[in-house]
Length: 275
Image (cartoon, rainbow, N blue to C red; front, side, top):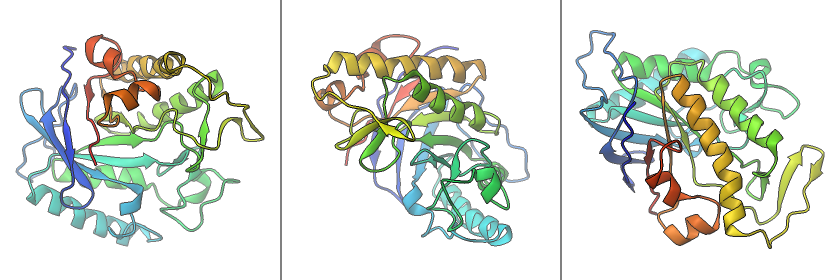
């Protein structure tokens, strides 16, 4: 697939925010319903809207039975369609959790009060929130990209990017997500950001050296980035990252935007977050 890298301006719009830019979507969505639509293709402009975990409540997605959940998602999607969006970036993994029927990760506590770290999402949800969301979006001709925070576990604790077990854990989430009819995988900007600690397992916290060099951080992060890119492209999907809109901060925190934008095998696009 031809690689097209776009730097996209992120701005607040409608519910959470959106970006406007050119997409290199590998598997352009087909209109499978009677709804007249224009979806993102290689020759069209991607008009994306972001749905954060903090938006679940305002969109009527929290602690709802399936019928009400679908009704409220449909209301949101219809509004997004009316506003000329064609792509939704849905926050599916905010804190090492899942809004899909995962056999590995816990359900999101921001989506259901039944969430518990002692149970998997598949053991918690009575229906599949992600599958329902995707089906509603598809009915109106909108693509869904799965938005993940790869390392964050809490606001101060992160999976250690240097640990292979953690890289595999993130890849497990990506593999599970690719079982769904999504258009792409999207990473947020949290890499080496923890002010507390880095987790190597759920029973211990790593002794993290603050003297680790920026170059080493980038090397650690890039192992995951390259691995996910290869995995995503095997499934003919798109992979992108939203780093900070500050080059120096990115390079110092492990987000190697210089390599991502200049070399093949890392990402299909970069969407800087400017807020």
